[in-house]
Length: 313
Length: 284
Image: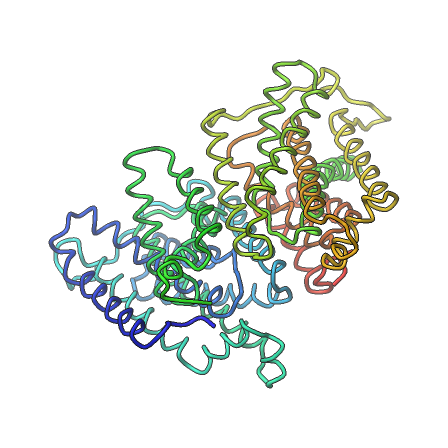
């Protein structure tokens, strides 16, 4: 059973979450521009990591290929804005739809497997997506990727902060939708499937359909995050969908604490901020990241929230 | 005709390499049930060590054997020290192997730099055997020969020896095997070492074939995974058949549809998954 230990811990978490959101809303005008840029990246990754938590933490499907759907969103936005000058809303909607479609198409296949097989297959699928991004030069630009993606012109806040606030608003919307989803009967069924698939099947639930829908929904949200990432980064290349990137999403989920939604958000902030800070001091960020993986696996399998005792299993 | 014979030959020789990498993974996967992301790192490490040892000794076969043995030892240490404590938890094992893979990747970058390496091997590797209007490079024949030899040795080991029977028992039912008094933890360590050995020898041979560069570890990994998925986990014969299928698919894919060549991996995997989710030779 995963869940907040008691009403009080739950209240504390809710208060902390809302306080965090308020801080993210009021602080940026007084922060240096670089910090705001980093926070934007944190928010985008938090969206993606939380969508992956729907699969890993709530449904018990350890997908190692989530970056593929993130990349579908990123490439869709990159192509639409650079080639046909699509607007923010159009690019966003198209990215979400295409990522959902990709995940619906792949989902039929990968749901044939479960457990450890599922992990290997999702990983292979994302590597195939990497292969497409890398070699299908006429569409994706190959290794050079797609460059100079223009930032959307939204015009509701002055002074370079508009994209940050757009991201924050979308992040809040996503988080609300995730919470509604996991609190709904549908979400409860997913948790039931995670704990015992056969029991849920006996109880008359369509297990396959629930898992399939979870995949498509998570894929759609990953596509949204990917679209924002394309705008944020101004460049999309095959590294968006490489193995390290896919695994980084999983790491974010686990570092924070799977099955909590808040945990993966925190995890995304930790991993992203750590990268920026460590990179100031040393070129060996990858070594540090490797250590984070090993330490998490050995001593913190339930993540930070698990270490703090907020969640138990 | 020329095209088909050449491409088939190239496909089969590539399959030899895929078998070395994928066969090692299928052994590990069968006995340990882990997603070993560090498997490509064994390949990379084997390649770099092979280059260094060949430069030092000048003997390709010594370099091949020593590099593979060294990596096998490293793999056994990794299993004993890191994987043992997280036994039985798929996600934790996977994260751990990812951490080790990243560590190896960065360490290799630190030691050997970012430049690509080549391994010439003995001078006769560059020659070819001519048969009528066809010519077969000796290096590729050596790849096919060494993979075939290793397959036969492993097959004999698995099917005809007592230790092999223990491995097969552990693949099928670990608890029962342990209850019969077989030391499964030692078995797991040995099998992990064997898998690392195969992957590293693939790395040395593969470096002679197509060079070595940073990032190759993660590039070769999905091939190994697809070999295991298509062949069925823990099945050496399955890995062999899958390697040949994929080697051919990859080669003809690259020749006929260069833009989506990596994607040709996807097709055999998709078909097998749709028809036989446990793989061609897998037992569900």
